[in-house]
Image 1: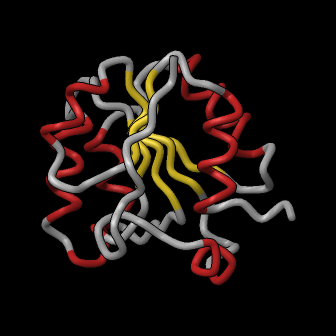
Image 2: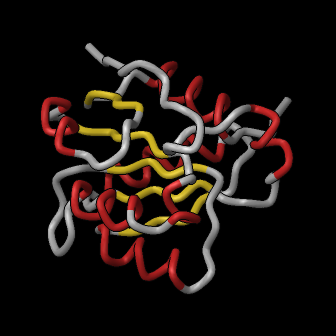
Length: 144
């Protein structure tokens, strides 16, 4: 059963639909070490009309962000090698610009999301496809 925490607060990783419309050219960043899950999420996000950039761990994603990538939304796994999702989120929280990027945690262990630096939406794996699609559309999709 998929679960979602209460909506994030503005300025703390949340966004509104109007902000998403302003940023139509910005991709969704998927940070997931499992290739099959990463590709499934890529397919779902692309079906909403969004472009996608992927990273296999938090360090790879952080390097992309620090070299100019500005995603409209981040889908973040927590348990990854090199840099896990919690460490990645703590790095984002330290950067005013990066901390404003809406982030949805996609994890098999939602209880581990309590250690995050920011208040983020959490979706439990295995993901509910309709829930993921609704969240992507809420924060970043342009297919309407």
